[in-house]
Amino acid sequence: MIELSLIIVGLYMLAWFVIGQILRRNDVADIAWGMGFVVLGWVLYYNRPSIQLSLVVILITIWGVRLSTHILLRNIKKPEDFRYRQWRKEWGKWYVARSFFQVYILQGLLLILISAPVIILSKNGLDEISLVSLIGVAVWCFGFMFESVADYQLKTFVSSKNQDGAILQTGLWRYSRHPNYFGEVTQWWGIWLISLGAAMSLWGVIGPTTITILILKVSGVPLLEQKYKANRAYQEYAKRTSKFVPLPLKKG
Image (cartoon, rainbow, N blue to C red; front, top):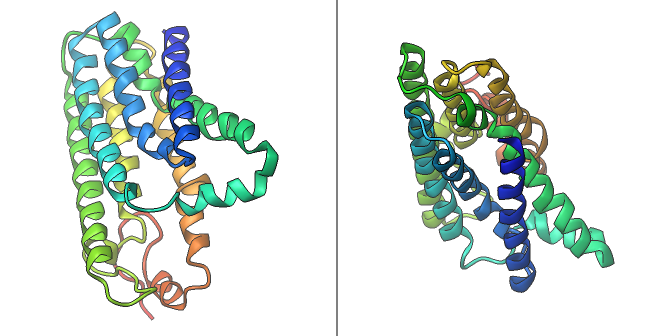
């Protein structure tokens, strides 16, 4: 199944690379991210369906469609995201080649790693739902609601704020500086729990571990924390608010 997954994701990312070059904005890769899991999941399901895999693919579809739609509506009337604009300047004449490998191909490889529970279920999925799988569904639902509510709160705040540099510090954002990322990671741990009934499914832990490291150490939290490094209001907010896991406010 890994060979099929590589082919599917490779063609999918190649298509989005072409779209990105036509539009001259590589932040379309962010829109492609969520839907990539949906495309891979359904192809694998139709190749070898099972009740366990169908449950996981449905949940991933709900997550992926919501995320990609949210990013599309957020970015459609804005210029290219600051991260990609910066890379455009830094990479110079190598921009197209480095975009292909460091944005699209790299993202495709990460997508496959994160999809480890899905790929395992496409080979060893069961036609039954265990108690652990039901717990996984509950964990996923918690993460999905957390991410969705956090995104909605941020969207509402951004559209209504009247002060440049203002920081959202209410709702879920009162207890975590990145509650949307926390929700996303939680969902993938739920997906892994659902997959535990399949043979050798412990290897699926590669999936949630990869996205946890990616968001906490590479492309999620670190980039946003760096963006607001010079923002005094954000630094005050950071002193009393948990970076990731929602926790009560720090004293002092």
